[in-house]
Image (cartoon, rainbow, N blue to C red; front, side):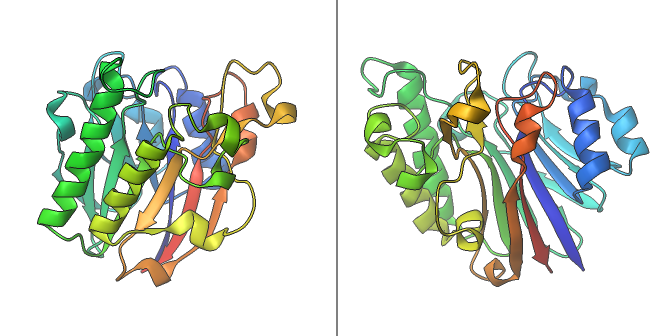
Length: 262
């Protein structure tokens, strides 16, 4: 049975509950992975989500910060959460569907403003988180798995509005891109989105600081969907729902979708 998955940094699931409901009604993904929920798990507003068929949830939460959740119409079981870099943050949760597919939902640290671990502790935490991800995949090769989330890195030159101008800006620096490549190589992951949409600029985030985000289009592709080799051929129909960035009181991220025939 095919299923459609979406990943979205919602920037507060309680503040933007209506946007989540709109996505559920209009796009109807079978599985919706949210990051930056900024809510304890018990305060995630499940009542209306459940009414729309999203009767299953696995999540890790914090008050006001971080937080990841997987909402699903399909039965699933929680299979763990890792505290990469030992930050004590709610940044990862994993669930397994009945078809045996494991979904990892990540919210990688943003890394602050200065791309120097000596001058900026947050940048060091980001690199350490990615290193721990890499090491985990070296220790146990993932199988029949999908990795999604706000990875806070735009790896390709056409994943940012200006490669040259952003080379020293956190999210597109060479050291971050290299760390992300090591994570991908360690797990044998395929970038599903770029396999489906191989050419041209592609963004999923536009800064709140831009007064006219759509016209200026200074975006970055920070949100990703990856798959392991054994299921990568089953993935198709990738897209970014760019118009969601223009909804009322939006997140600064747009949802990213893919469908898997599994």
